[in-house]
Image (cartoon, rainbow, N blue to C red; front, side, top):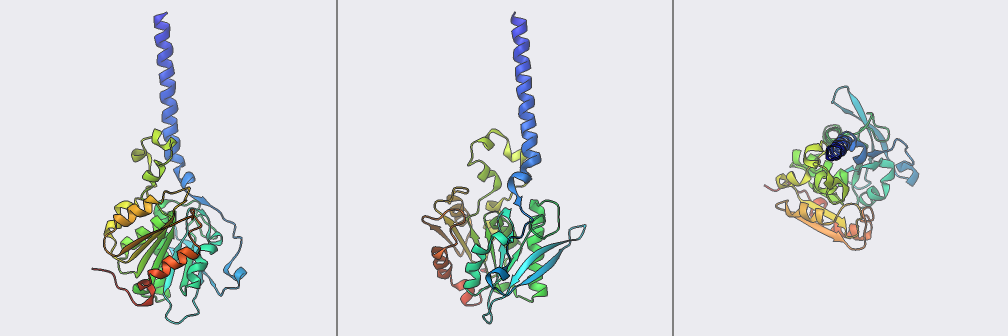
Length: 287
């Protein structure tokens, strides 16, 4: 009888171990599908709102050669600064007008891009390394093709796009500024704010890491972080942590009553205007 119970117990724990191992494998294999939520459907264009714009196709050198799609929305103001707009993990650029419109209304020329796997861009499915390459390709397009000086270029990122923007800013310390909205410190830390991911050894399993908190200490350009106090997806404290880990000229603003996307309202515009050295005069990187 005792032998039978031991065998049954051993079988149970072996089955449990196999189930846990399969679950770990699923987390490792499927994390891209969990993180990225792309859509190919373009629901509207800047022309829908009566904006002047240009469809652009930007080559990405990663073999095989791919192209990313974007919209160039020029400002009507002379000597306007340019904003590179990097959207979050879901849908595509056509779902992000409500964010980009505020910066267009402030007088920026705006380049919005879709990462590979999103919208009209090439690529089967996005991944972290590709998103970084796509942002770099967009930067090079602005600097080389549009002849925009880095000191007149501001990089904006929302949510996951904030992590992509931080990575780009780390590589280009001479840009005029960085604006990050509703982003996170790292994918590992963000996952651990939920209950079930804590069951797994995320440090070992995560290969889509987006470790922004390790990159921000290197940033030299002026930085603006803002976040909705009622964000249900990413704790606003993560923007505070990014600000605190980022030396030099940095401001963080927590917008009362705003959620994950609702930061882009009148309060956000007032906040952005308060950081006016970014576009009212040339601003070189802080030594």
